[in-house]
Length: 188
Image 1 (cartoon, rainbow, N blue to C red):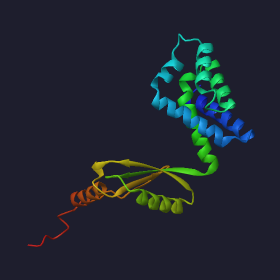
Image 2 (image 1 turned 60 degrees about the vertical axis):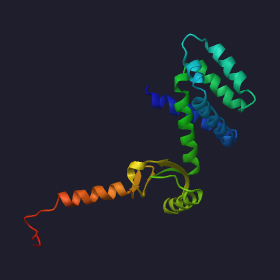
Image 3 (image 1 turned 120 degrees about the vertical axis):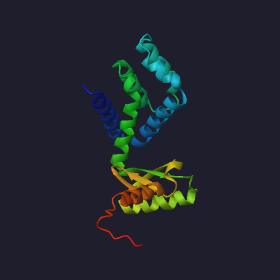
Image 4 (image 1 turned 90 degrees about the horizontal axis):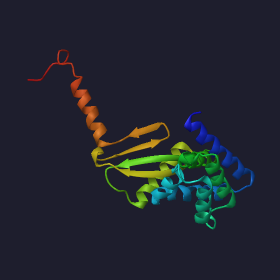
């Protein structure tokens, strides 16, 4: 079985349970907390994936750490993951759950790359423009990449709009390279 199939099956199961119990937003917050834990505490991943630590001990530790912080269904889900020895898939399962949540609510993710940090106002204006163009709620993520020299690159799903200075320079370079001097008369 492909890892992505494992991940999506577990994510979909949790999503359907959350939808059935009408707690999708609460479970999404739990999943975001778990993902944040992976970033903030790398030892959690080591603990979960350690082959010598018994599943019962992992379950006990996770339950103690999260019992007052997340929904009971989220804890039961984590226990199921540990019981079925799918701990190494947990982070990707969480990511797939978030993707299902966004798809259900029609939320699209846009990545905006600029050569410098934008103000909050600029980000809000760009976000509104993208939402209008795609007729969807947009979750805007920003990156700073000084190599684009200026302008911006906007990526939404599989579409990209490259308005960077670096891209414009490359286009000019390509135009100069493709000039056929035999057909053009040079002014003397």
